[in-house]
Image 1: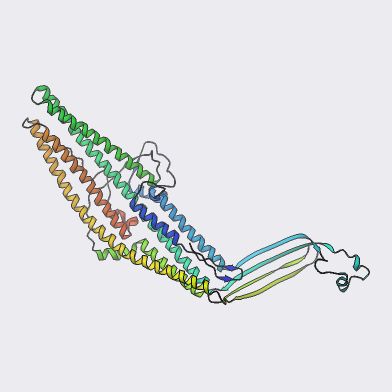
Image 2: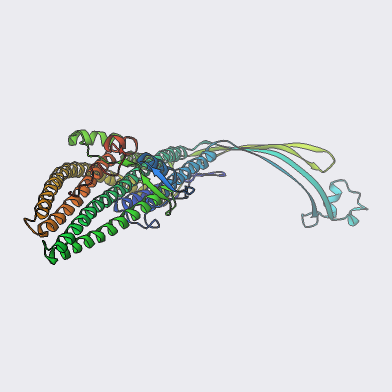
Length: 499
């Protein structure tokens, strides 16, 4: 943070630059995209306070999760505090430009040495002291005085100061847009965490369904082996498949529990709070949008784009302030009050003075301030041009991701249907004694892979839609249009595990 001064009698105007604050928020945004799980490195995965524990299981919809995230997320709380800090600094500068009125009063006992002040017997005689008493006059005197006065000061004209004031207002608006950008990132991260938990829940459902199928096949293989109609190898193969699916279920349940804990951390729930996800994520297509339409919407809605524009405006005003430092400044200072010996006669006193300050030669300072301000404007313009290209890139990437994710959902859904039919037919052949259970085990493995891929593809598709909403600057207000949540289950498709 850089500061500089505009000279005026008893007036110092400090330039308020929020570049460090905004840069910090940009860094936080970048870390949120990387999404590390350490809240000391990425505040978006942490929360400032924990909501009271609810006995039993707490139902949690996506709307509730986002509401709690906006209330308790650590990054958004810090962004609001930075916004309040910018407002406070603007008020501090306003106080330097507005009239300042103060009341001053004092009373005290003073001991004075008249001889040290230049009083001699000859001086005392001139003040009316009799010549015979002058040599013996006490030169150490005590005075009990009281003073009361009202002081007023006002910067009447300081062109550079008004430029700095307008720059502070632009910086405050930049801090507001930075806070709104953090709000969008909170919605994006909470929504992503909720979708991750839903995907983990779907994996558990699929794993449980396959485990029931494996349990049935293991029982059948045992009975056929006892009856002598199947080899012991079929029973062993079925037991291995059953235990393998048990391992898969254990891992899926562990992933689901960790996903819920991560979601709790982002929205202010204690990690130990049991939650039940009440929304589902059915597959829903999104209306096609062209890149030109997306760019127009992003430039109008994205908070980081508006934030950068306000930063550039503030930098231009600061550059003008550096130029106007050469201009004279005019100020007024005065007071009115009473002064006298305590308890005796008081006399009115007043002061009224105006000051005109003209900088004569501070060329090195003026040129240095100008060069710094110009460099800051050029730097922000370069960043703004890069941000424009970055928005274009992000939108194109989001549209490509959305298109490819939709194709992945279509293909993976077809794979699940084909793998389910294959498992059903292999199971029928095994039950009829036409074949052993090796094709059944292979079909189960294929179905498990197809189901996992389907869950991942649905998650990727919904995440791509959230990412597009974020890149358009609409995720915090229109996320429901991009992720139409259902209810009653954890997945948009019922688990399939064969017969």
